[in-house]
Length: 80
Image (cartoon, rainbow, N blue to C red; front, side, top):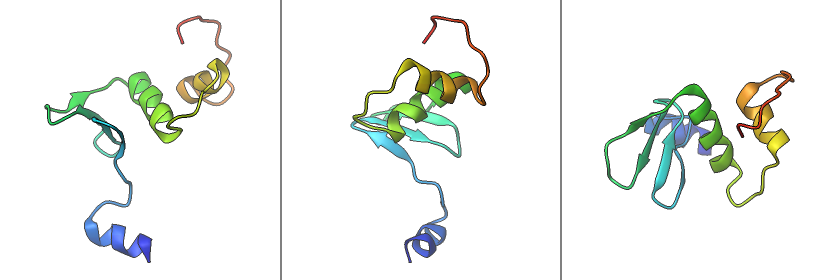
């Protein structure tokens, strides 16, 4: 039933949000409050999405690296 309602609304993928920050996975844009959308790089999008999907959870560096760099890619950086 929920799937049918979402399809009728025109979006099967919900907008993620937490407070004033929202992320539209289809448009790959973030907004803060009612300001203009912010275009994100691929890594910025992946990082924000990972944090919003697991709101309130503490994500380890390893989990973030897996989400940012993908399929077991060897990462030797302290950037995260």
